[in-house]
Length: 287
Image (tube, rainbow, N blue to C red):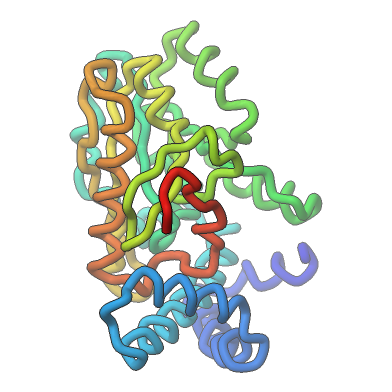
């Protein structure tokens, strides 16, 4: 994998988009990568849309997915200046006072538009120390390469199994941290999640972001990634909770799910429909 990806990373983004254009019919028509998963997810999420509308979103999603692959390869070698030209935070100033107060923040989003450039640039786009929380990649050589490239500008990559120790460590030493947490993954444990309605379905959400926000009183922000045009993104922060310790259990997570759902409904082709989001079933309800 490394031998294939790294030479392509030297190409300018405009040439990588040509590769993406060539890749699209292969992925969509020939390989048919997760077509059944994508179609089922779309049909359950948008039961009132026609077959033609579903197919249109589906095709647009696969074109976007190929673009993400191109941008991901380009991002492996992109400089901070190049990233800033393509990935701009529109209102980072609302985070700055919290840094000056020495307070950590939690930044919640989903796999919508480009999230890799946020990981790579988190530590130099904000004054806070950037920490990206995620799941360890199973492919060891490629996983090590991706982690190394994600962290090359200072963002610390933390596996979700180690996040408790990381929160405790930075809280103990009073380091203001911006924790980037993508909250739309499918939880592995049905007894340790929060159920809510999301895209017309009972959906399980990870509770970790809210748990740590309340434990350490970290303000929580949802960040919306808008695709301005091909290869150019703007990120806008929206407060979810200023004082999490005063929130009722589940309110922050439900508010996040509502914001993410609204974002997806605006331009559904930009969400990662190929992941198996609804693997769990809510056994407490008859469906």
